[in-house]
Image 1: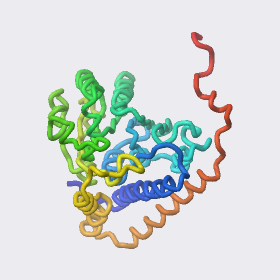
Image 2 (image 1 turned 120 degrees about the horizontal axis):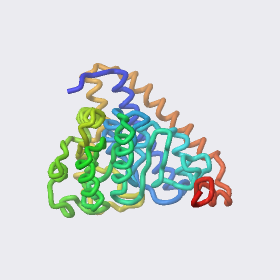
Image 3 (image 1 turned 90 degrees about the vertical axis):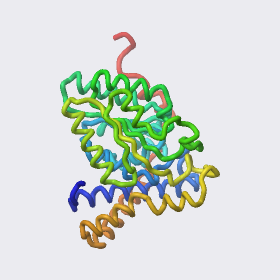
Length: 325
């Protein structure tokens, strides 16, 4: 097990808390009509994003799903630009044109999509480019347990194994595909046996245990960087919010929701740091204030930013030059 590194682990704790507090603020603002479009929040899965992305460089690629805020923050996004994009403002990551489900940040090589399973093929493309150029960059594809029943899942794992691509598949098993339990949609208890069927090393970890995810990701990234090919990590967790904001969540019982809250990753890691690392409460008080300040500044920036001009709808559609040049 990883030993306590006070600075690194406090930074990881802060990132998890930042994700949670950001999502809570987004939910509050969305309920008041301040953010357009649909909204899918990441609460409860923070240890997965932070545990994996803490092993990545800016030059490594991460691709994600419609529920991507956690990975984007963990990868190191400019929070002001991210929130501005959610508000549909011209200062956003995609100049206000992408919104919540289409967040792209080329500076940290991050992208996401609203199409279920669509995180995997682009991750393979980035991994192939790295291998072709003889670089040691890796790519990570985040996806939910529901996406593991898509054809893209099997096609991507087959190709990754065949070509020994430096890609890590991270399945975030949060119990539900929209409103359907995994037990009602998937023929296997977990997906690691599927990955092993393609000859890919696979592990099942507690996705609410930050250090378990961290250690699994460390091994997978080292494997990919050294040219040994892909890995598969399945992280069991629980989606604390609905599939989308406004979801009545009739498919969950109150008992399992309360049990999930007792096992959520942030407070769990905080207790670990207090007990094993003997880290004082002053550190957590400071971090809480820093997180609140960062989020407040990001929301103020977004709210004051201008809307895109109508004519901007025709910009950034094509590359410069004529077709065929």
